[in-house]
Amino acid sequence: MDPSDPSTFNHKFFNHDGLRLHYVDENPSSTRPLLLVHGWPDLWLGWREQIPYLAKLGYRVIVPTLRGFGDSEGPEDPAQYTDKVISSDLIALLDHLQIPTVTVIGHDWGGLVAWRICQYYPTRIEAVASFCTPYFAPSKEYVPLADLVKILPNFKYQLYLITPEAEKDINGDPEAFFKRMFRPVGDMEPLIDKEIGTLVTGRPLRSKSDAIPQKVLDYYVSRYRARGAGKSLNMYKRHRYNYEAAKDLDPIIAKPALMVTAAKDAALPPEMAHGMDRSIPKLEMHNIDDAGHWVLWEKPKEANKYLGEWLAKL
Image (tube, rainbow, N blue to C red; front, side, top):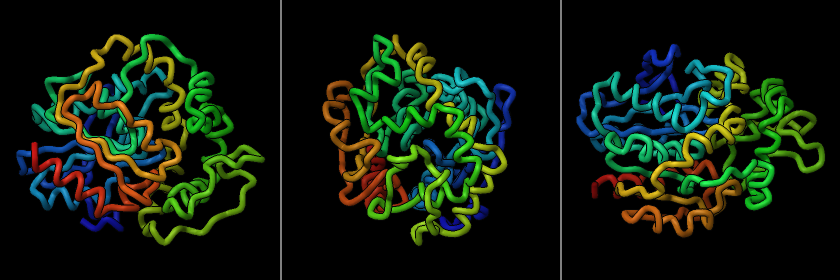
């Protein structure tokens, strides 16, 4: 496995719910399985610095590409992208691999999936970890996205991502999009231009960050060119459906849990994780300084250290 070359990983496919879904499966002979779940606009490849590390520690590392992303097919309907549906995809993958229980680890939207799969399928999950994405107990009342961003203004960008213009914006130049998106925190510009309100269109082109290997960038660009961004953006359009599916879940997660925040994550600042221990009694928390949202590859040594030490205690 070479983190700078996506072709060096063990790529597999399985069929579920009428969809052909992609995953990476490393060290499959191990009896200690981990399930790593990505967010948006990521793919399995967001875990490229963790997969070899965890496999070397002796774990089986299973990293799916979520429905509608990259090499995984997906429907058009946003209602088919709730955490409940995505959790069912992940459980189907475990069934396909004949794995009864697993430790699940998420980042970004994958972090929310990781928390929720514990609630939807508690007998299948041994422990849970999340990078950047704090746990939120399911809301008992529906809060429209427009109202939510008044409470959490750091989520304001989501109001653009649910529009048809956002899909056209990304699809118009995926390479320029990912060159802007994938940068260390010290080199980031606002996700959406404050004056013209776009991700890419009308903004100056940026060169590739040295932090992103060329073959990694090429992989993301090729997958988004092939599938388009539309289905992946259902992660934002699903807001109402996600609420309906989750509102009656037990808010307490009794599993051993790890929460790792990134000090300079503008979308998911560390203070959002305060108070999580009230719902997750077996919670261990860490923060990584001088790291942004892409902490998994921006600060891989620190991320891997916290993850490896926590896993060793399970």
